[in-house]
Length: 292
Image (cartoon, rainbow, N blue to C red; front, side):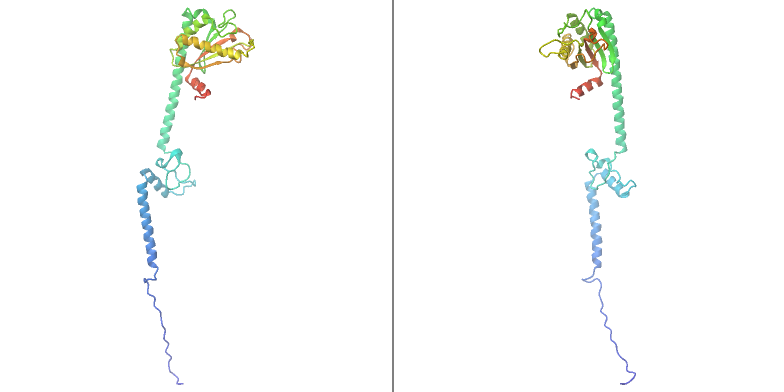
């Protein structure tokens, strides 16, 4: 073999053409395009499906998605449904806070309501004080009331102006053990009815007895007697011209609330109590009767 003869080496290189049918770059570009179009149409949909307030809330959410409290920012009032529930397409979480303007408005309304209630109570008090003064003057001057001034007791209570007609030893309001009014008791009640009509307040009428047991084989007790006497007083007031619609409550308490606790059989414990009620007392009475 001859020395110096060279060996020829042939290298074949396979060329790969990019961008052909089997290339992947176009897929990345197409995915970017589809994503951009999806975002674009999402924006268009949101603009068409939301109000200005909702868009402001969504914008705020994306500007501040992770507040320190760990709760999402409160949506605007426009995104709140009944009871403060969010109507947003994005679940913001947390309790929807009321806008400052709404809070201020509600605060003003509460203050106005409180002022109105205070004004109403003040008017009630002045009205009842004036009625009490008129009654005192009438008792001193009226031929029907003056002879019984020691049996007519007036005082202002938290529930209103209380007018009590009490028994005396020799001058009872009712026949013994009956609900029949004495003629002079009827005259007193009819005289009072005109004064009660002067004010818009409603009244309650309560009958009381002493502790003397009612003797009856029919089960009729001082409870029934006191209630019947209170209703007899109501009829006399209406007969004197008082509007029957002014009566809110008629009850009998037997001897459960004594005027003279030291002497349960004192005649003064037998009495009729008429309360010209304040508005608060009237509402409480109606609420207690299941009408509040």
